[in-house]
Image (tube, rainbow, N blue to C red):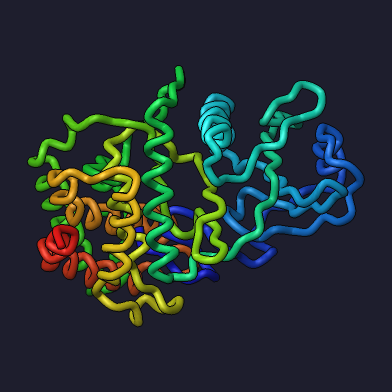
Length: 354
């Protein structure tokens, strides 16, 4: 899941969009929702145009401080899933993991407000900057992922989260078939990506990943889901994708995300290679908390290839574009990067042995 420039999204989330494209709060809706919280006298309310355009957010400043109010998007508001996500977040918060704390309603002390057929969440607001792309910040992103995995080894839940991932994803077949052949170049690109994905999945399966232990993972570990200050992670957000998987799927995706180079919003300008220094630093950060096995290291390139392809093809199959980038140039970039990863997989493995 390669990152894309700050003005847009990472592969698995959405970035900033024009106001006309975003859902908003109605005045009466906002008054009703805020009446359920005890946050003092409100000084200001401002739009917060980040994340999914279908999930409106507001930055609220009041006497105690700043808060972020969110209405969950339709399809992301299943109560059981929200309860699971909140339980996981509160478990991590109790362990001092860096994340925005949920604010509970004043009447029933609930972390989720269900009102008028919608689900709302209120979080403390944590100031920070986007990923600065430094080696120090990359190391810390890997370290915090290791901490995340270590803390959740003892987390338990009766809720059964989804088990699907970007690895060996059955829906990828339908996604490739759903992309229209808009140009003469596209069919050959899709054939290459499809076969490359299948080859990578088969290689990883042959290593026995389906038998490896599973644990709760974030499943969306990318720069857009964390805030930094002074090259340190001060907050990790978006736990909606958390599920039970072999931890290496989280690690490989994170290694891909934090080592990709996207200098602007024109994918034709993106280099084929990943930043090897950031790739190595991310894994070294993780190793400070949880050492990777040789078996995990050897499947990492195959998982990175699958993450790159699956998280690009699936949204393009739905909308014909990736965020605000047209599908064809984006897939051309993905083809170049997938080829580089295929040819350089052993080099990446060797980097981690040094």
